[in-house]
Image (tube, rainbow, N blue to C red; front, side, top):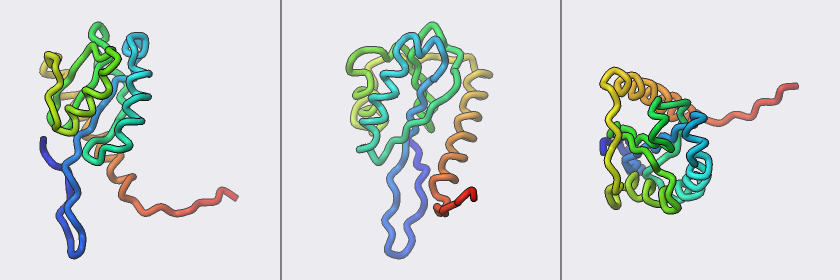
Length: 139
């Protein structure tokens, strides 16, 4: 997987490569178990420095849900509703083992559009994560 890490400065160690686990939040994926999957991924990914969880409106692959994409590789998987799906997703994102499933094949124009949207979303999240926190009082 490609790295989104920054170079190490003096006294800093390089940050590990990051894989973004992008979970569909669409209504059909929710009906098929995306919410419990996301809830378990939140718990598991807190302890995984090389992966981050991101929600996405809908991949348009409703018949195959719940759907997860891995970014930057740009691979999609569906039908992740087994009891161990979250653990398998985390192991795949961390590069420990491959996800034992056949990737979904999105039409090229849809795949490109989703990848661009995910890249924009990840960029925004990373800028926000790296921004210094300031206290703001509305009164």
